[in-house]
Image (cartoon, rainbow, N blue to C red):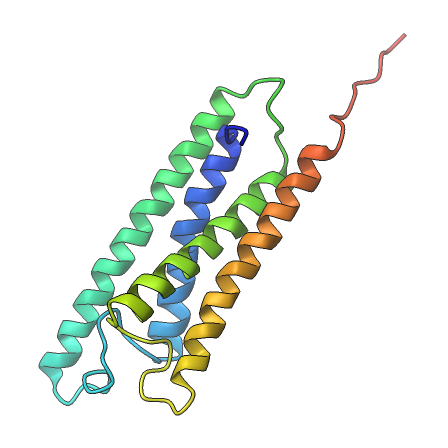
Length: 166
């Protein structure tokens, strides 16, 4: 297996962070489906104290995704500063790596937090709880596949040549 380019590494870390943000903002905050630590019994807070605890846990989760995103930006800056002629540099590579990173977030978070540890589920207590969890895992696999495809297609393209001026 070939080593990952600095641009691909930056995109993967950015995708991990931004994928975590997408999860936290959409599923935790907008839809209110769950919190970071949320069993079927505790997902619907019965007290202000429980809601405060769940929001604090989500805050630590967002702090982690923010930190990943900052690391990804730093890696992207470093990749740009040390850019080599033999390393592909394109928006397609960066976008593909970010999609793959987001997919990796969904896959790992879904396997560990939903399935292994049972910290929460995508829709805890819903009659189709397992289906929502499986769709979340499938979204991870799909994002990884799409991202990898974008990176490979971009890498297979010949580098643009510069036109000689007379």
